[in-house]
Image 1 (cartoon, rainbow, N blue to C red):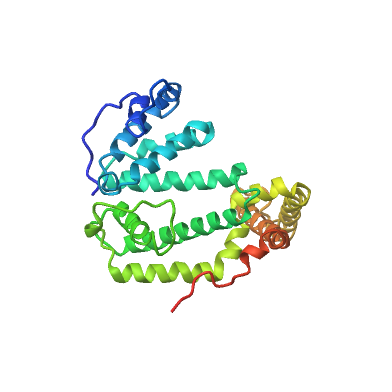
Image 2 (cartoon, rainbow, N blue to C red; image 1 turned 90 degrees about the vertical axis):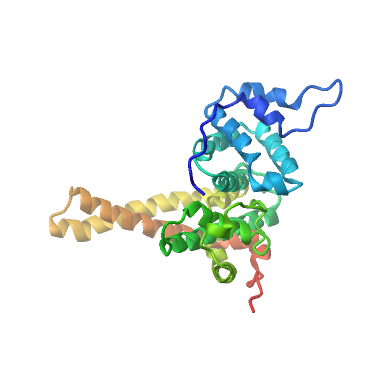
Length: 308
């Protein structure tokens, strides 16, 4: 529930981290020592509070493997300055309310990690892994959309509980690796067993029919393509810019000039949006053969899920 938590002072970051790590063996350096410098980074205090609040969640209390999961995650953060900065920034709002808010924030941080890994090249030589990560991001996006619609039908409910309920309760059936196993306040989420069955079916049906098109616009895929096929990808990007300029000029000449609207800010913005959408559509159409060539064997199964 989203009542404000009792304000507390953040501990030094390395102390908060140390509570999640295995003690050092005799003669070895303390693994938390490397976090001293990170404690001076932006939003380090917020992340320290976040780690302490994680120890109050249902997952810490009931999931025997949870501490090891967080320890492994912290080891990855220690090695990646960019991911650590992104994660620290997300912690600023993560402790503003209840334990389930902390859990939902952890899910969001783990999703950022998955996308970050794809963007930086972790999957460049593991294309099945790239597709699997994309599928999970698609499912999470669909669940957020469903949860958003559910929130609109409820009165006096904490939307955090609604979003978390769908993620938590469909973790296994939708194979959501970034989602934890427990939440505290499912009973007040307003999400029913029927809602969950419907959501599972919606997500699976959407993935079967829409995932390949969704994947075309996924930013991390573009990063992989730019590294693996730079000439072809950059040619498509240059064409996108050219298409935008051409379409914008055409719309200006055929619609704005006859109406005396050249220089009108709102009219310029309107045709700019239309030109951008047209150029993006052509870019994605041009990208499709490249994606099919690179990932086709991993996308051939049209029905990822069997629906009864």
